[in-house]
Length: 387
Image (cartoon, rainbow, N blue to C red; front, top):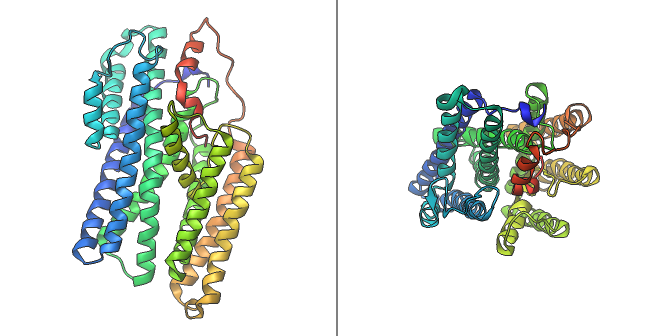
């Protein structure tokens, strides 16, 4: 589908609203779980959950504010050189982000702009105005989806690991824990698929992500590989927390170093670029992303070979060093799930990239239909993580 055919539909607007509600529920269940642990006297668990919430919140505010600042300086986004962006002054931007409302601000403006374009203006826009308005909506959605991706892997993923460990260690869980784990899984799944679809739709020279079977296969590939990895880490936690801390630290450092080696140029300032590389390193601890939009067949092969090694070694190591768990039902079930999800994840990965991945690029931009202007305006999106 060409850029000229892409529309920000009413269904897409409604799904954005669903994403906002899912995000709110996920945050509140995690906060509620942290408070419950605190009241139960489990101070370390409470502090861990709360620290993950703060980490996700802090990083998303940093990048959200930086991108708004970049938009103010971008002559394509702000051709008149106005001192406001989306009606917000620099001072108001700082206040909103200091209050942790960066993502909510972006949701508000995306829903407001989308409602205006889709319901109020309707057919009053000519073809050129319609293309520009819908492309602008997808650019806003892509910025938001990238922030949600950061939040999902900095907050939802690690606290999900902690909760799975607690359930395994104690053999029971509260209703709040179950709700928190369910919504964390949903938040991660939503963030992965929404990010991929929004990013590919916002870049004119990249073919969009087809809906239906390709999206489903991609979702299964990510969910199965992510789930098996989280469960393998949880088994290592049962062995000793220090083992997982060391392993995650090593993988985090390797991912961060890889970002340095590739010399990512995502941010407009060096300090933000350093934060970005550290965040990318942490995301790579849980799942694979193309860091710089290059051919990654070899890198992906190395990554998933290491992934498979960790997943297969974790149950064996626990069984060898803790013989008493060998006949435990939870150990047998989780080991089976890890093996099944690892195999299924890699099968869906191969199926997706061999048969369903949109390889062909769209036609080159030209001045006649205005796509060249849109391509230049995508700016930082060309440097976003590629799914």
